[in-house]
Length: 182
Image 1 (cartoon, rainbow, N blue to C red):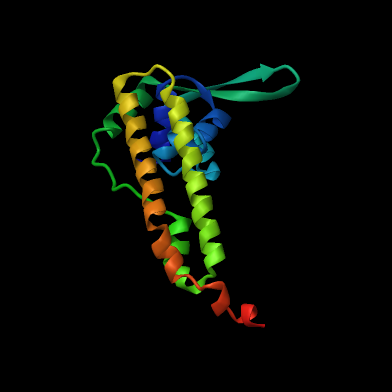
Image 2 (tube, helix red, strand yellow):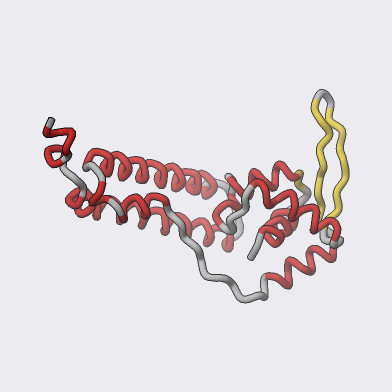
């Protein structure tokens, strides 16, 4: 799945501005599905419009710049539906925290502990965001998606907590650092 398909998915649910699509795909509920950068969404929307998959109209706003509102066309709905039949790519998980943890033996224990706490806090905030979404009524398939996300985040937090000591044990103790000896 790509940014083009993600835009069609968002528009499948209803009209949206480019800003709203960008917000949903980078910070909102769609940010968990496909990696979409700010710089990729607007070009994807332009190509979709050129290909007849979406249309747009300009809405004037009082005291603010006009906004462009996108709608999916029947052709766009058909392409989106067909894209759901394509073989799925493997899930991609990237984590700066895991790269950091990989090099814990090179780092002071205080820094490793700080990063562990930061990661737990970050994942806990993401978990709370999903739990807020779960408070709203939704169809069973959407609830299933949220449950999956909750399970993944909960397990990650628990794994970090359980493995905390192992990671701290390989970090450089304060007394072993050259600046601590001075």
